[in-house]
Length: 146
Image 1 (tube, rainbow, N blue to C red):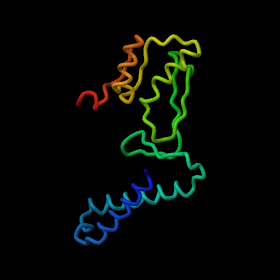
Image 2 (image 1 turned 180 degrees about the horizontal axis):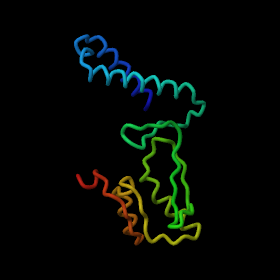
Image 3 (image 1 turned 90 degrees about the horizontal axis):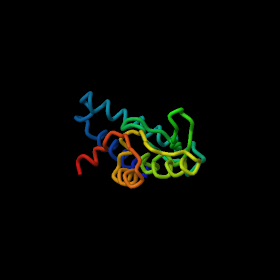
Image 4 (image 1 turned 90 degrees about the vertical axis):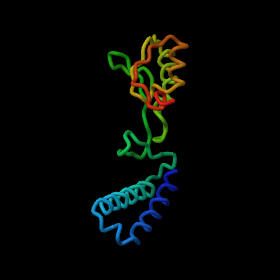
């Protein structure tokens, strides 16, 4: 929950600022300032948003956004065949089955799916094999480690 992360970060900022020897190090001071800016931005987004369903999501480890995600399925011709809208924190890969089923309901024959590593989670691999769909996605590190 974002509010818990903000509270933790604010306590961390207080602790670090009390340690004068720590903030003498440029690397620590830089990271502390970055954390302060991030907390301030998150607080502003929380206060400005009237949409209480919107959530903070991440497209990369260092890139967050506040709102919703649009998960799309497209044909080779780049025609949208299905869409699923979720709050920002939802994992992309969890939407694959729904996108395939919606595409098929729209009359699209799904033989193959191309996606990023988020789509190569274990359940999607099982689903694609069971439905004879070729899944082309970089293996998720969780799969290769487990």
